[in-house]
Amino acid sequence: EDLKNEDLKDIQELGQGNGGSVKKVEHIPTGTIMAKKIVLIDAKPSVRKQILRELQIMHDCNSPYIISFYGAFISDPNICICMEYMDKGSLDGIYKKIGPIDIDVVGKVALAVLEGLTYLYDVHRIIHRDIKPSNILFNSKGQIKICDFGVSGELINSIADTFVGTSTYMSPERIQGAQYTVKSDVWSLGVSLIELALGRFPFSEDQASDDSDLEDLQGTLSPGKPMFGAGQRNSKEDKDRKRKSMGVSLQGGARTMSILELLQHIVNEPAPRLLPEGRFPKAAEEFVDSCLLKDPEVRKAPKELLVLPWMEHSRTCNFDLEAWASTF
Ligand code: ATP
Ligand code: MG
Image (cartoon, rainbow, N blue to C red; front, side):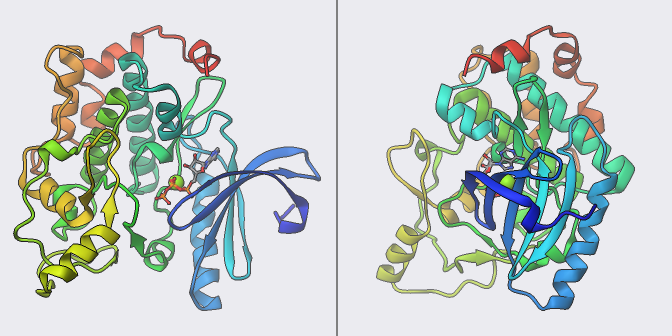
């Protein structure tokens, strides 16, 4: 009954992330196709076992908007997490392949993510912590589901987020060291929705603030630790080198914004919007604006967003996601 590595046959590499890699595998005894996530964890055996225990909560997460969980096991020095395989992959892969996503689909994505977040929080008191297009998956039945949510506190502690080569969906309050709340997930959703609708990460070069006040930054950020304040002044050359090595590639942008420029931009500048005005339905613009209120006090929670007009529209909109899925 227990899932073990010997029973799994590799079929295909699905992708690489910061914390590990994901493979399409077949569970030989049952013939079930699964996605196996391999997470390299540099931790003591006792911590690994604790992580494994915490991951078991995923067995109780049953929602049409949440990836199903088959089981997890230790395969030294890795932890393997086996989950439902989604044959159309993640939404970042989809827009990179087909370009900007139809706004009606983006509305369905928003609805699915909010339903998923509401389920996780109301039923299990889980905050996702990593909403972004690569963690929103799609299949040929037209289903949209979220994955990679923060069930295990020990797992979150064991993986340092490295920002190299990545974009950031982190809310202004998180960048400034505040605790995660469901509202931080809402910010990340807002950024993700704009990215899907425009077909590019929304923080672009022409919005970038100047970097005259660039401070030193470690290449990694430990979850829960504030980012600013610990910076040390370095030489101009050092900063240039650092900026290059931490460069974040922005699709559509003429050059590269460093991770620190990006984080400063998120904190200091107005939030991104669905632009140009009039290209998208008013209800969609309003929805995204309320996800991206910079003050978490006034930003709505997932449950409150579910009753906004754009979500009412998305619920009744008869856009055929299954037919759409067959076009790519
Ligand atoms: P990061 O590590 O920064 O969170 P990521 O989400 O892209 O980035 P992974 O979570 O390791 O990294 O996933 C790698 C890729 O594998 C994803 O981009 C996605 O396309 C694919 N993938 C992940 N889970 C599944 C799944 N259940 N079914 C199909 N494809 C998946
Ligand atoms: Mg992921």
